[in-house]
Image 1: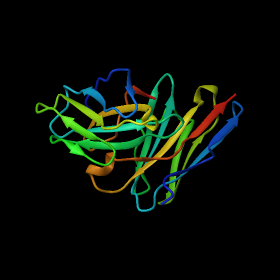
Image 2: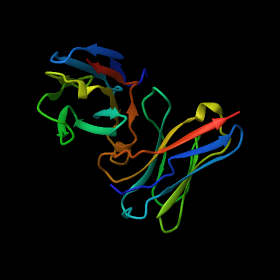
Image 3: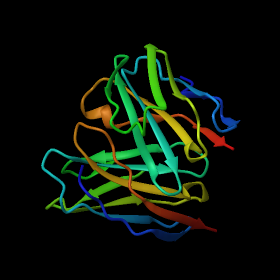
Length: 116
Length: 108
């Protein structure tokens, strides 16, 4: 398996623009997680899905952030409008169904977002 | 999630064992201890987890004290590629909360 695939790897945009980050989880994994990592705040969970349904979005910073999972093989994280403080590395992770293994997560390589 | 405490940094010579400690004195009975690592510019990578018993896999060994208040991750023969930030996480069947971890530097 190719693992969790994220695109793009790097994104540079200007303040106010819409940004869409993409993630393809490992086939057969039922859970998908979006994280954000910054020097100041470390690695934070933004939202996670189970069987394409958002379960916990309490980590989403504000209404400018939205995430969708239209099917089992694709998810997006959208920021509209983007702000410089959104600059970070965004990771996607997935994990299979078993309860104990929900916390054995497989991470993608991340998308490094720079908002100018 | 249980609060965990790890030293901010450690050094290890290549080929020697790296022993990374973690305190989790508030861990509850149904919470596992998970270890992840993050090599520079990569996503976190799962290493190992355990509940009460010591565990070993192809990457590492996990030693959990009998009272479960602390644990040690052991990399038996550290290589330069093991240089990374290592995260110890106490968690049940809910989301992982990553702390600041231990930055392990393996030197020749």
